[in-house]
Length: 136
Figure 1 (cartoon, one colour):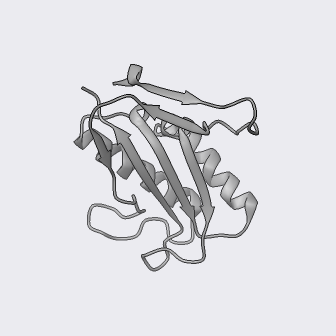
Figure 2 (spheres, one colour):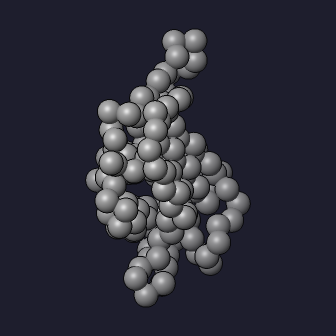
């Protein structure tokens, strides 16, 4: 399926820090992953007050979810990253940690990084929402 995914940065739009403005999927099946939260298998929050630990748990959970549908990070065609902060340095640090992780290829596609006031679980600082073009 990877050959059916095209990522585009039109010259008329601003340069990006690694993602693409447009991702085109020619055909196939799509999986919409629920927001991946920094919860362990028991449903307990990992890394209270730690953006780094929570980001790492979100990465682990996302990789598990991708594997469950026989997909890999390069099959991701859209990502939305939510960070509970209005500090651009914090947002940038989470983005950097994600892009150098094993999930990193997922963020070369159409991506949005948002600073938000609150997330669903008490103490939650990071969440990642992924859309995946499933391999044949």
